Amino acid sequence: MDIAVIGSNMVDLISYIDKMPKEGETLEAPSFEIGCGGKGANQAVAAAKMGSKVMMVTKVGDDLFADNTIQNLELYGIDTEFTEKVAGTSSGVAPIFVDAESKNRILIIKGANEQLLPGDIDRAADKLKQCSLIILQLEVPLPAIYRAIDFGKEHGIPVVLNPAPASRELDFEYVCKCDFFIPNESELEILTDMPVETEEQVHTAALKLIEKGVKNVIVTLGSRGVMWVTANSMQRVEAYHVNAIDTTGAGDSFIGCFAHYYVKDGDILNALKMATAFSALSVMKRGTQSSYPDATELEKFIEQQK
Image (cartoon, rainbow, N blue to C red):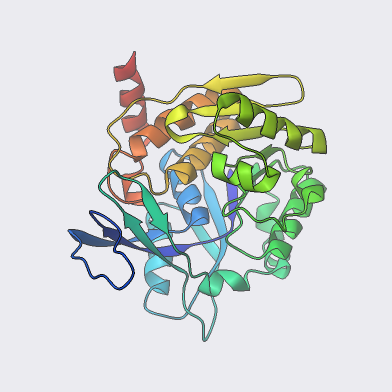
């Protein structure tokens, strides 16, 4: 097993709109789609589509969405032995609104994701020990996240933490145990209480986290690319300029692809470059997981950019 994703899954309820309605206003929206999403599941699918062997530790409800979520993960070859149903609970859902400029607004109802507990990590221990990397996000309870971080530390497994959605309750004692901390600019702003409008401000905010003891801060900046900050250096990877149709799940696609390439050869900068290209491709189609390219499509895209 290459990668373990411990975290969330959601059912995406995507409304494509011209504009958001005002209070009390009813508008007709052009189209609607249902898809499989959730930050954890998206990251797992992205890594799997690139060819990584992926397992997922997650919870679904006992509703009509549950079996579809499990079958969807298995469709991509993801190990679902520890994807468990929770009786009397709904699956997580995410109503998503994508406007005419491809910008999105998302609500999440965590449902069964709230039931992921530290004991679930321990029950999956034998299989987790076989993994080369653990990926975490914050759509599940923090105690499970902290246990997973400690598990990685105990067994010498690198940990990627994506602080999404950002939580001011996040304990940086645990963050500092992670090998990679990957916020977007909005999450960086929330976690540091610092402005991030300019590249210099992003760098300064990232350095604040480095000063706390975080090893690698990788800030995803959307159309501005990526910034990788350590105690000794700062490197930028520029974004590809593409026609963005739907940016939903782009950050997750970046993390899944980055994880795949990091596990493959340990080259962080190359992994960042490949992940930047992968996420650019993902925004050129509607949907989340359904918009993610495979390895052949990614290689073709990169070749075309030369």
